[in-house]
Length: 325
Image (tube, rainbow, N blue to C red; front, side):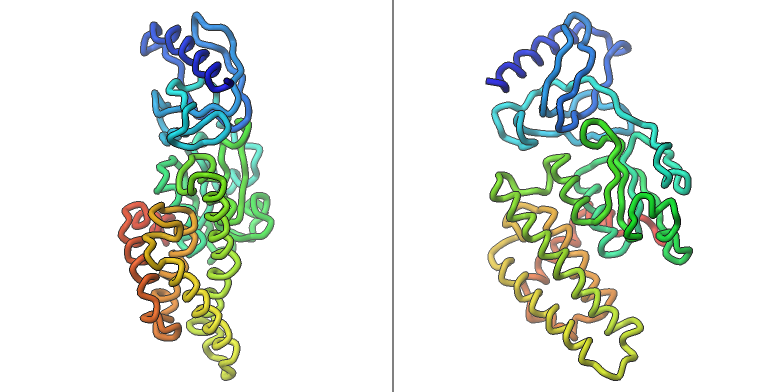
């Protein structure tokens, strides 16, 4: 019933606003998940609608072009209540209250701000942003100059790790600072309704495999890199290296079985689980030069999916963002 009422209100608003000239047209932005109150177009009364999505119509320059599809309760495609009329509202573009903008000024404060490097964790977010088509501004956090330890960066992420974001169009229309790559991926997926399996069960299954990467693949593959390529390679005692190699092989076997007769981790649908996992697989067999060490030839399904991942245009772009100096 609420959806039917909402659609009727939106129809009346659309009819009333259709007579407005292009020069007098209101600018439209996507709604935050909470209720938004805004002045109605000429000829319509004020209105308050909760959890309604906006379609891809008359977007202002430099702001999201990804439409939110979904019902009044969820941003999902293919549901009965998917209003086709955008809701007029305003976007907070003043980010001056955030200390990080003193060190990395926002040239486009209406866009999502990304603070990152092209590491396996960092490129998760640039790949995701390229996949979903959400405009953003990138800022390079230089480890060589200890940018991650600066007071400005620590004000955004007290854990002094990349990536981190500052979204001017956060929940309830307020800027949202966020760190931890897994949390950012989940936030962006839910914000746009993309790269997250549909339905409650599919959503939690995707999150399950996201956590599999965060708690297993990332930490274990990273330790292999340390003991095989970096300072740890000089240790005479190879037991630490062998321990992490064995655990990495075990995790690859888990992923290999999951990908049997599946295109992606969640089947036919490309999701944040893939975006989280395959930059680390790529790093393990590429930059860490550990393919022979983990006997990567034993994992044809992982190899196949890695190749498909690296062939995606958004992945190609995201892997190079931000550019290395």
